[in-house]
Amino acid sequence: MLWLYGGLLTAPALSWDDGEHIFDNPLIVQGDVAPFWRGPRFGLYIPLVSSAWAALYAVGDGAVWPFRAFNLLLHVVNVLLVARLVQTMLHTSHSSDEPHAAPVTGVAVLMGATLFALHPLQVATVAWISGGRDLAATAWALGALLLVLRRAPSGVPAMPATTRATWRPGMREALATLAFAAALLCKPQVAAVPLALGVWWWCTDRARLRAALPMLLVWCLLVVGAAWLTRGAQQAPPAVSMGARLFVALDALGFHTRSLLWPATLATDYGRTPQALLAHPQWAAPGLVVLGVFGTMLWRARAPRTVGVAAALCWATLLLPVLGLVPFEYQRISTVADHYTYLPMAAAALLVAWLAQRVLAPRGGEPSTSESRTGEPPTGATRTTTPWGAAALAWGVLVVVCSGFTAARLTVWRAGDAVFYRAMLDANPASYSARTNLAVLLCEEGGVGEALALLDGITADAAHDAPVLANRAFCLLRADRAEAVLALTPAVRDSAMQRALAGNTRAAAVFVNSVAEALHRRGDEVAAFAWLCQAQRLHPGDATTAANLATARRILGGDGPPVTCPDGLTWVQLAESVVP
Image (cartoon, rainbow, N blue to C red; front, side, top):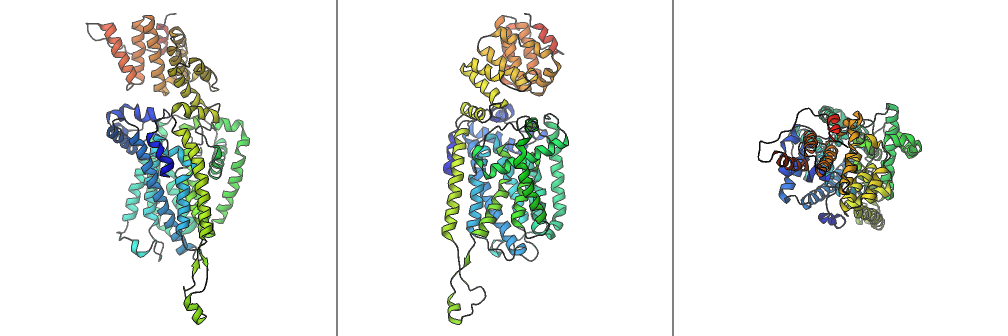
C-alpha cells in the first residue's frame, strides 16, 4: 500500500476543490480557524478538519506534502482500524450468533483489510487532498464503532481476556459518542453510522440493540443537527419528485455496488445527474438486480445468525446519505462519486473477511497423539489444518488485481491538473467540470481557441451559468480581446444570471475583475473602479480584487483623499456604465 500511494507525497495539488477550499482559502492561509466553527463554509460544516488543514498549512508554509502525508497517514490508520473492527465483529458473531461457524483466522482479517487498503475506489479519497475530510471522518467513525462493538454480548467476551480493559459503566458509550460527534465535524456523510450499527445488531445481537437504543438516539440527534447545518448551507440542485429520487437512489446503489465488484471503468466525474438518469432510464438496470439481491438479504435477516447478510446490508445503509433520497449540492455534477464509498468499504471488507473465513477456515486433520493411543480423542484434541496454499493464492489474486487497478487510477490523480481534467473529459465528454476547469488551464497557457470551444460545448444552460460566463471573460482577456469581454456585460441584466452570480461569488469575482481590467485597458478608470467595488461586495476575501482595488484607488485618488466605493450599485447600472 505504501509503495502504491507513496508517490503521492511529491504530487501537486489539484484545482479540483484543493485550491478554493485550502490553498487559496484566506482563512487557511491566515490560520484564522474561528469562522470555521461559527458556521458552514462551501456548503459543509467541517470545522475540525478545516482547523487541521490550517495547522498543516502553517507547518509546511503552504507546501503540499504535509497534506499528502496527512491523507496517507489517515488511510493507514483506517486500514488498521478496519482490521481490528473486522476481527472484533467476526469474533463476537462466532462466539454468540454463529456458534457453529469456523473460528476467526488471521487470513480472513487480512483479506478484508487488504480490500479496504488497496481497492481502486479508495484512490479518489486518498489521492485527493480535499478527501482528507472523508478520511478523518471515517477514522473517528471507525473508532466509535470499535469502542461499542468490543463490548461483549451477554456472557460472551468480545476478545480474549488478556486484551480486555476495565471500563466503568457507560464509559465506552460516552467516548464513542464523542468520537462520532468528531466524525460529523469532519464530514456529515457519516450520518448513516447509527443506522448501520442498528442494522448490524438487528441481524446479529438484538438484545444488544435494545440495550443500546438510548445511545443510538443521541447519535441520531447529532445527525439531525449536522443535517440542519449542512442543508441550509448547500446550493440546492434542480428539484425532482420523490418518485424520481427513489429511481435515482436505486441507480446509485446499483452503480456503487457494480463499481465495487468491477472497478475497471472508474472516473472522476460520471455525469450521472438526476436529469441525465431520467433521460436514460436504462442506466438503472443494474440497480434493479442489486435491489433484488438486497431485498432477499433483508428477508433472510429476519432471523439472527446472518453475519454475511448483515455486512451487505451495512454497505447499502452507509451509502444512504449519498444516494439522492435527500438532494445534495454535488448532484449538479453527479449523484455518484468514488469517494462516497470510502466508509462503506469497511462493510465490504467485513463481507470479504466473512467469506474468507468460511471458505479458508481450518479443516479437520490427522488425529492427535492422544487419539492414536486411546482411539477416542479428548474434547478439543483433534488437530486442524489451514489450506495455506488456497489462502495464499486468494490473497495474492486480491492484491494483484486491486493493485493493478489502483496504480492505473493513481497515474491520473498525481499527474497534475491538465492530465486530470483531460482524463475526466475522456471518461465523460459532456463533463461540465472538466470543460470549465480545463478551459481555464488552456487560457493560462495561451490555448484560447480550444478553451472557448470547450466552453461552447457545454450542454448546460450557459446563458445563466456564472462559471461559463466568468471563464469566457477570463479567456478573452488573456487573448487581449478586451472589447469582446465588455460585450459579455449585457448578460448581467438578466435576473437569472444575477442569481447565478450571487450563488457563486468566486465565479462572480473572476468575471467582474475581467471586466474591470478590460475597462482599465480602454482607459475608463471610473467604470473599472465601480465594477471592482461590486467584486469586493460579492467576494470580500478575494486577493485579486483587493490588489486591483488598491491600484484603482491610486489611479483615481492620486495624492488626494481615499476613493470610496459607492453604495447600492445594481447590475443594471454597472452594465450601463460600459459604453460601447
